[in-house]
Every structure is written in C-alpha cells, then in structure tokens.
Length: 106
Image (tube, helix red, strand yellow):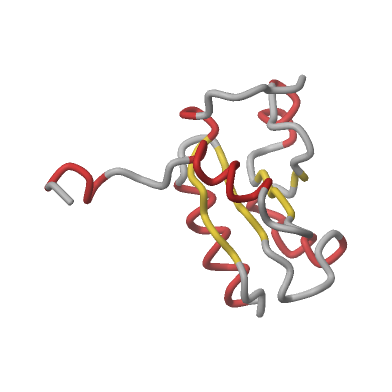
C-alpha cells in the first residue's frame, strides 16, 4: 500500500459487486430523499442518515448484510458506526455514489 492509498476511501464499484454476490444483502443509501430522487443505484433502500433509526422497519435481522453508501462516503461512514451501535453485526461502508460507474435510476 502506498501513502496515497491510505487516504482513499472505499471503492463503491467493488462494494456493489460484493453486495450483488451476498445473498440477502441490503443496499442502503443514506442520502436525503431529494438526493435519492436525483439518481440512485437500482434496488437501493433510502433511509437518510438523520433518521437512521427507521432502518429497523426495513432490516429486521441484526445479522443481515447491510452495504451502506451516500454521496461521498462521509455520511455512510457515520451511518455504519450508528448501525453497529444499534446492534447490526454485518455492516459495510462502501463509499460514495459520486465515484459509482454503473447504472443509476431516477
């Protein structure tokens, strides 16, 4: 690993591949509803960071794999920490949709 790789965040494209390969996984978008409406990754669920406790209505099993993303990776990092505090045991921050190269729905 070189010095600059240390500062690079998660690779959302790699994270999406891992999400698709994980049975029963949830793709969680923690951006605002307005950001989500402007374009989101297909099959993602929108639960904004500021109301992350609503995740309990979508993901009932605490061991369910949850792949979290936002715009840049900052909110998803926060959300992943909060989800872990809430007892979710299989949470992964995959970064920001700004770096995503796949299909986006509107």
